Image 1: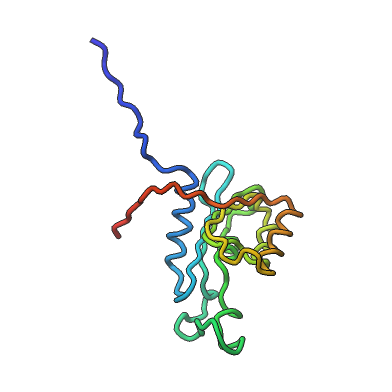
Image 2 (image 1 turned 90 degrees about the vertical axis):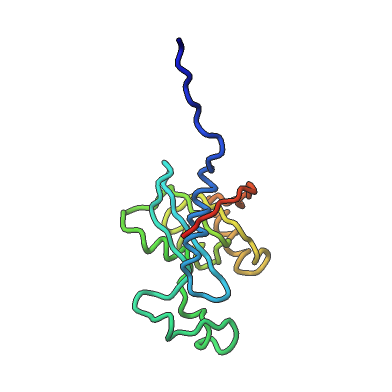
Length: 165
């Protein structure tokens, strides 16, 4: 009698779903009351190398620095918060990021675009592009195009994944 072999399950998540999920989960660590952004850097063989989220630098208290979006520059979050992409790059302790892929929940600003290019990241998968058409967004895309960094918007599959923590 021939033994029946089980087949692999068909409803597993794709690599893009997995890594964008990790980026989204990382963003949930942000203390920013208005914008939570997460990033995940992945090797060419689909290994997670680093993660990051938007937040204050080490040693700077989340309770002592401002989180406001409006007001005098020094009284807003903007001069103090490190973006998720830069945090992911700075958190990596393994050497070169040349040829890696970055998953990020919000299209990178021009400052992060510079760091992404300099780090050698070659591919970018982003979720939201809510600042599309702004000067910083245009500058990011211009630099990515010039440097040969490929960027593509994440395509939602509609799968619902639930975490009960």
